[in-house]
Length: 251
Image 1 (cartoon, rainbow, N blue to C red):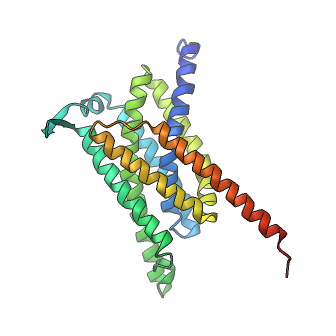
Image 2: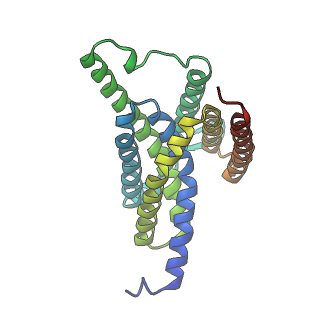
Image 3: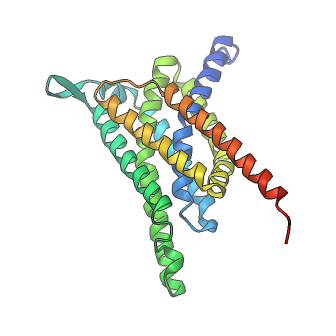
């Protein structure tokens, strides 16, 4: 009760929750884009599982703080540059994100009509392919969740002293992301140009993670500002297109 009555605790909770939500934007976008490849009836389940895994991974990392902080110790050196466990996680996570986002851009722009589960003849074969794709996507989400969770938890440890506040902020932020994930995913699916922009955003995040692994810090604020500007411009384009469609004579 003493902790709950402390206004500083509530301020820390609000700040950390806001930060966790902001840091989770790239996670939501990644999940929304991957989930969009699934049949409609599987998407909600995949979103819930993906964000559920994100929450579990964050909580597990919080409850193993000594191990997490130990990841910052150098394991070896390359050309005079110390490489820690955290650096390796960020490096492989960044490279995976670069590959995945680039591949999805190619599929969206050049190979939209690639064969998928719906193209396979036979109901049983289609169901088997859908399940295989479902678990493949869940596995990819799990991999990137660990990368984003590690960065998020290390940030949280630097901001707040009470682990209970960290846990509460993580749970609250994931609940907010769970509510926001479906409308964001539906909006991205309806607007292919926004999807390409979101994938370009993930390429930037992948580059930032890779650079971070080599101690070249890229403030995420710059990335978010660039993405926000691009989204505002695209929102104006969408509005203009809708107005032109409304003015067209109906046949």
